Length: 343
Ligand SMILES: O=C(O)CCC(=O)C(=O)O
Ligand SMILES: [Fe+2]
Image (cartoon, rainbow, N blue to C red; front, side, top):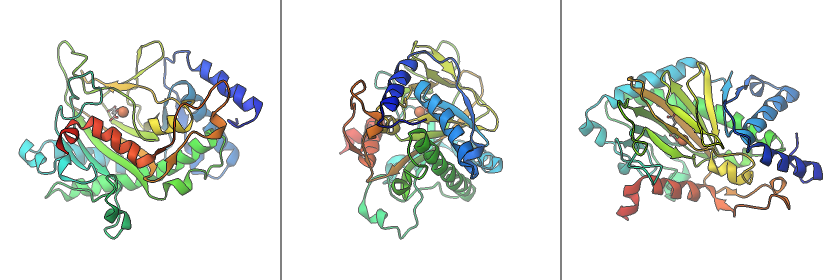
């Protein structure tokens, strides 16, 4: 599997582009276990499956991901305790009070779909957790900053951070698998993820009853901004993924798995050979839903430019280079409407 400059590689890319127009009806499950080991042949098998999913669906589940179940459970136990606080308490750590998009976002304050009325969820975010003496903190770049935390909830902080560092390990392995899937060496992205930007959130979706207004749902149709997203779903189903026939395909929780989806940065890198697929969440289950996406990008200053192997006469360059951090920040600014009216 090689997405390179050779004639074969280009023909393969073109074939994949037309193949992905065939609408998917299910989201593949990939056994990620080999990426935790040292067998290059087994790793390439994972990368091949990833490539197939990335070109045709843009979403896949992974099992045997290596994140300890008790760390995931502790995060999902701690999150609801925060959302159960009074609104006054939660507003003390409003996301606007931080410099790095960390903190609380109340119901309807985000709007990922400009055609909609707002997203029916609450969320708590943290960004990259850096040591207090990290020089990046002094540079004032929005995505590197000091994470804020609710007062008097040390258990919440502890659980979120334990989760943070475990998922980062998985994220680094995923970068390796993506590199192999793009025909690069496994360590291709490593110099670009020495201080990766990221957003880790836990989201609370209240259940919606009765007739659903499609402009007022848990999270409106959107694509993610970073390289990829590592999504943990806690028990309750709500996520849907749009296929090329315009059908919403359910992506329910599967115990022991993560949902991985390609974000817009990876789509840019691959010149849209890897799809950043629209998705949304609607919770009509009658139960509270919690999910925890971890959006992982590269270092702030990495220039994201289309990989040469992803360009050909039939598939010309679609994107100009962007600075990774500036790109994500501009997308955040569009989502958090209040930021635009403020400055
Ligand atoms: O909660 C989910 O299942 C999806 C969340 C999501 O798509 C997002 O936060 O970008
Ligand atoms: Fe998303």
